[in-house]
Length: 231
View 1 (tube, helix red, strand yellow):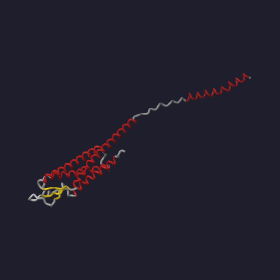
View 2 (cartoon, one colour):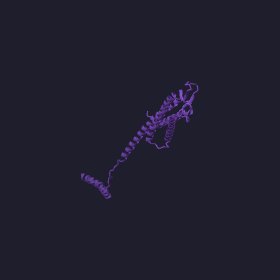
View 3 (cartoon, helix red, strand yellow):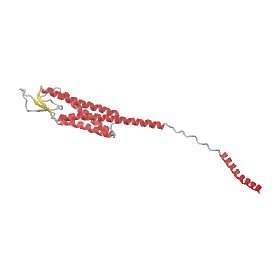
């Protein structure tokens, strides 16, 4: 059973909205990583420091060492996701004119945003491992980064749904072109009517009728003569 284009659009908008929700959850809950600082004697302590890639200011145990680039990448992902969701909303409400190439652009944009978010998380994890040997003794990842990985999966799903919309819209455009061409061929056929039969002149009709009357009048006379001769 084929899925309609409106159902795909609704699923795409809903999935894109959940991407924004998961990214906002990552901003609200700051407990991405728990850092355990080192002491002066390289002894571990129970004091823990919370850290996340959205932090504007660096912490005391982990100075600004390339974290600004990660923060810029996370902000770029959030802006791109919100923009895509906004464009999809305008497209569903027909404020933006329907065009199959917009679906293709949104597909590429979703895949790019998902790749950027995955690269940011991998880079952040690599910097955590690097900082463990320099600034803090250990770190513990909480449940909050899971929302970011779920956002990556949803971005890939949005890209697939946009690609399906592109194919459906392309098929509809092809069918409309075939229908218009067939309609144009049908309208080009001209019906040629045969010439009407000409009516006989009135004089000929009158002469023919007059001759018929004379023949009918002469028939009784001939029959009477035949009867007389027989008697």
